[in-house]
Image (cartoon, rainbow, N blue to C red; front, side):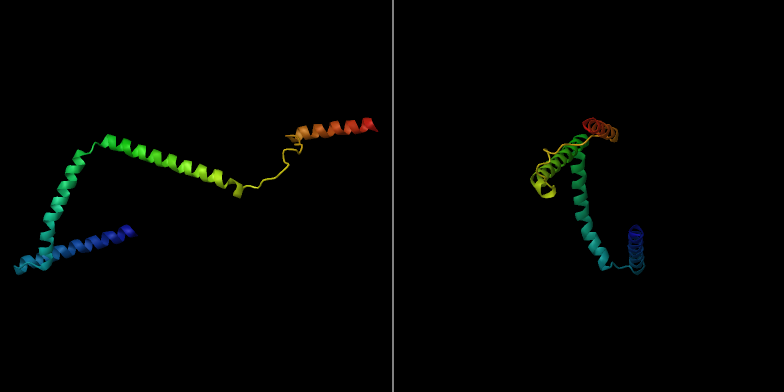
Length: 128
């Protein structure tokens, strides 16, 4: 939708410029808008020529390498900041349970649990 609106506005400006130029040619006099454009044309041409000269001086493969290096360093910086933040703030976000290492851990799988219960039942039968 935005593209369509921009297209319509640009089309209206182009049509209005063409109508102004037609009116100037038919009346034989210059309107104020054309004088403003004529004064700005020299400035725009100077700026554009300087931009073209600067772009011709750029070594594009090295520029790509520079941007890759910049993006890599920014990524490393963000990762290091995140690690520092996570390390400093970890005690706020995690629940510490004391005495957890003293508790006996149960069997890892259901099969081992069944085997452990079977052995316990055998010991109980022998003791009785």
